[in-house]
Length: 217
Ligand code: PMT
Image 1 (tube, rainbow, N blue to C red):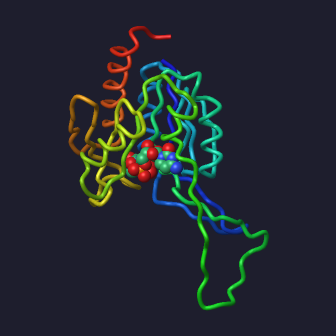
Image 2: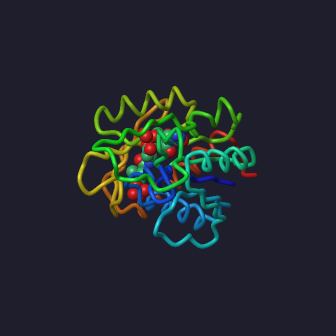
Image 3: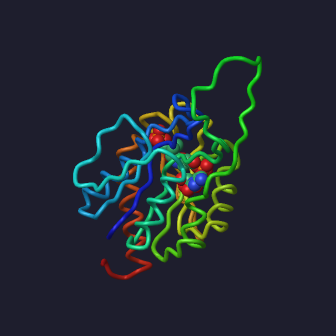
């Protein structure tokens, strides 16, 4: 199976020295890449900036902005059997990037932001991806309902939902706890290290992919 995984945060530049980003460390996505590589699947990891080492036997494309991540995904996705969108992609980016460092002058500063491309939302509708599609959902309330809405709206086979308001799991932590939401069922995976959860998720996604597509390519 050829699997594409997005991971980490994006960085949206404001001026030559400043950017908008978020707390994603990349650990969940890198753990997934490693888990699939251990199963001897072909893995392409497309990642925003992180402090992590690239897992062995994984093809790697570094990106910075949401647009760069979109472009890399759009280029490689059609060749993939499965895709897992774990990255915490910025939803908004500055309308203009100042060519020079913005000076401290006025008491307030207003940044105008515009929407970034919805990479997961484009997978089916714009890029025409036919393979097994897995999104993540970072939620602070109504975990199951919000994940199910994303599952249907974005044409996913599976959403992996995590409650990012809880201490010790989700963004920038060693552990996570997830609810797997599929059309016919929900499966809760209890709190564990991201590495253990990733192995479990890789087993489940591989089994589901085989069930849907029959044979490996
Ligand atoms: O990196 P870690 O520190 O290990 O933390 C892991 C994590 C918390 C980042 C991860 O488990 C997680 O929840 N990733 C998804 C984060 C997110 O942005 O969720 P969302 O609910 O805002 O987005 C829903 C889905 O759309 C996600 O699959 C996301 O990758 C995707 N998306 C979002 C915006 C956008 N412009 N394009 C996208 O593809």
